[in-house]
Amino acid sequence: MTGAAGASSAGAQAGMIQAVRALGVIVRVEPDQFIEVLLRMEKPLIVSAEGGIFKTNYRYLTSYKGIAFFTKAARPLPLPKDAEIVVASKIWVPGEM
Image (cartoon, rainbow, N blue to C red; front, side, top):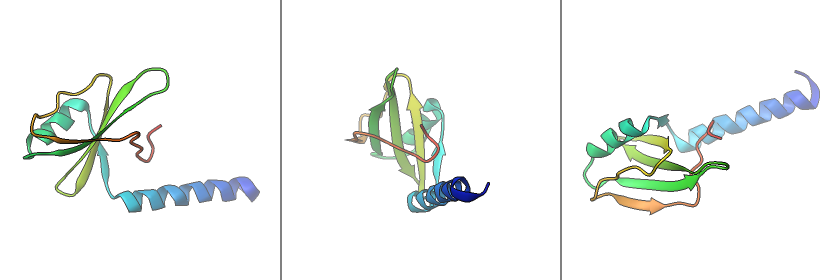
C-alpha cells in the first residue's frame, strides 16, 4: 500500500498495538470456561454489559492471576452469589465488533 491508504492502515495497526499494550492480555473464552474461571476465585469481581445490534448479547470480563478473561453469551450467565458485579454501559476488547 502506498499513500494515504497505507498511512491510514499503519496508523490503525499502531493504534491497535497501543490498545493491547494499555489493556494487557485479554483471553476470550467460551461462557462455560468463563464460569470455571469464576469458580476458582473467592468473591470474584465481574464487569458485565449488554451489547448487540440486532440481537442482545451479554458480555463479561474478569481478571484472574493477572490475565483478563472475556466472554460473550446469548443469555445471562449464572454468576456466583458472592461475586461483586460492576454493570458497565459497554465492554470493548480489541478485535471484538
